[in-house]
Length: 290
Ligand code: DGL
Image 1: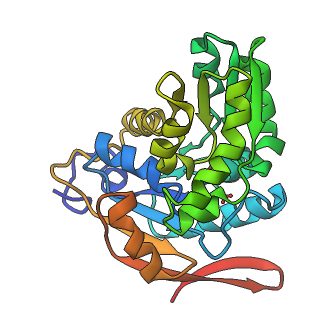
Image 2: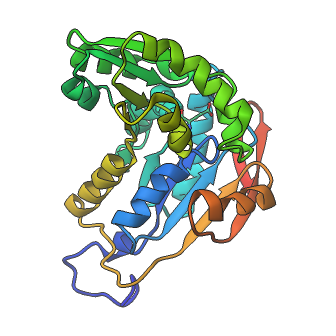
Image 3: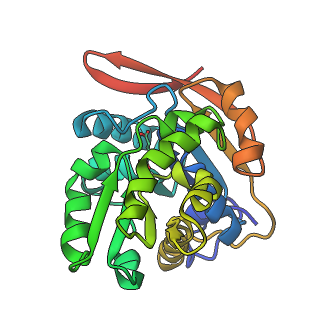
């Protein structure tokens, strides 16, 4: 059965068989897509990597919001039924705005997992690793205000780490040096939990765990985000009933062959990768497939 053949009039098949969309500045959102694939294997997925603009972290919230809005329009034009903003920086810059601009579209975004960290810390000292833009956004301020509850949060922006991960350097000496510079002083201050507030960072969890040791808990929010995607699809009657393993399609504003070469390692599977190009016409941003 497909959207064209179902005539029951009760379900929303025309939505159920459409893809979900996942976007990030680059390969970071693949850490979220990995969890979505495990929990929702029947869903078709469109993944958008804005590798022409990565990293987002040092950019202004206004600029990241403009990119996020244009990417969202592009993905909706490709038929997306739900959009996962699989990027903490884009969520900080644009999630609230996107929900207002596209009121009929379900969005799932990222926020640093301060809540579970504050609930479970024994020492009361928690590390949060995220980009400068994420720390500047109102979303982070609101999470801290609501959930930090007397817990000391030590923040670090890990300059250069996103670039290392984009290059596939998941255990290179330079990557270790960035993480040690961030984490060793925090360990000395008694952290027992590390919150990964950037979707690129789960790819270096093995390295982080080597540096902080087995007694420090590292929180990857991806499984919780994937559960939220499943809940929203279910509630809206838009969950793809399957069966089978659905296809993935990728778009990048960087080099298609570079993204394709990283997919097996970061995601464990691949799919067709199309290159897209940013254009600006009278100040208005748009995207086209090339
Ligand atoms: N993966 C992104 C995040 O979660 C963006 C990192 C970047 O482009 O700076 O924040």
